[in-house]
Image 1 (cartoon, one colour):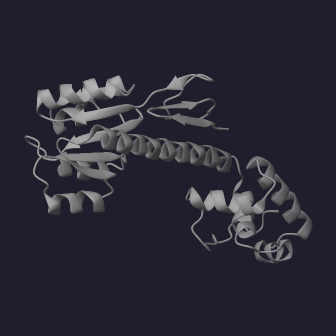
Image 2: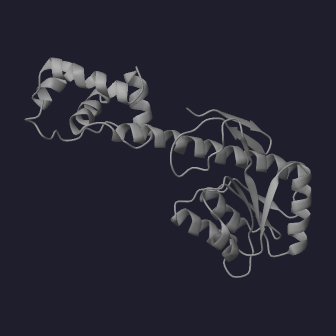
Length: 244
């Protein structure tokens, strides 16, 4: 189970089991970072000072290339990104991250109010696009929103990881039964489709619910589809028809 508490720039994960996740011990606070990418050292220093004064953790980068080299997707946080950078631009970095399926929330900063670039960035999923120098209150509000987005995205990914781990424990026949159950088929219809007895379907159905750790077919259907185990209204082809 996962429990989360968001408080300003902090969030606490009090319990989680799974791989490929930045773990914190029960009750320990895991603080995300604001990744500031700007070639101007004075801008970076000013942002760092202001953000740390409001209890944000800040990691600085002078270029997009440096960010790519040092950044780990396991580290929660958001990206405060200058649009005009030497070498790789801010929007180029955004595109590269998306191509790698990395969805860190991005707030762009720009000194010239480039409308076409802002539209491009926002369409690609940027949280916001602010002109330099941003008002502190506005920036803090946007950063808290971006961190909340990152937190919720990671929690959803973690929950789906748990669901997929449970799904992996099902036998091939149990997966067939599960797919038909969540698609709304009755036990009688499932028995006919899979060429097994009504009693066998009931046994498999109970085992599926137990292994998926739920008592609700509705919840199982909702979470399994949300996590990509089955597309909407999909039904796998029955296999191993001779198996009970």
